[in-house]
Length: 245
Image 1 (cartoon, rainbow, N blue to C red):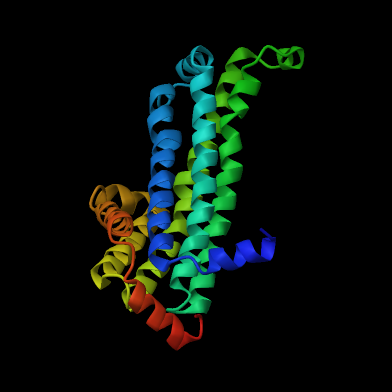
Image 2: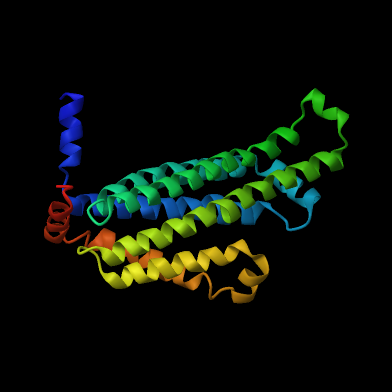
């Protein structure tokens, strides 16, 4: 099969199938994010204690490498999701769909770079000769700093881009003919909730209510995509009207 033929077949794939694949990759993205940024770091990092954290890392090095692998899988899955969403929402508004994809990919680039910071503690806590110029306490503090920077790359910087992405996807969903409008509203509210993370005092004051729309909106969208997909007939009608079909 030639490349052009394969590309054509992918382009002609049922919108319902694309939507369900988007649901699969959305679920994979969220699951691996939870493992790489929440579950494993929660087991290794001792808040405010660089010494205990360093000892925990040295005792569980494969676990930290697993967190790095989970982060990379999350980024890769999210890139696929971005492409699928762009294709699904083109009939609604091609320019806005492209803008949303661009915003999300920029955020993912930051997250990908931040993921490599998870490997930095393994380097500074190693036994290489050149590290002997530093005191043990300095290396432990540096390892802790790298982990904090990784968390900031994902949970602060990336989350801002994702918040904007969620708002745009929410709007596109609301304006679509092939997905429930209520899901679009919930996704937009999710994005607004994530934006509160820009100002820590406000986010702490509103927690957990600022994150509740995110849990409801994203879960609703994932489940709908997995179970129902999209209304293929309405998608084709909207695509035909916009000249995308």
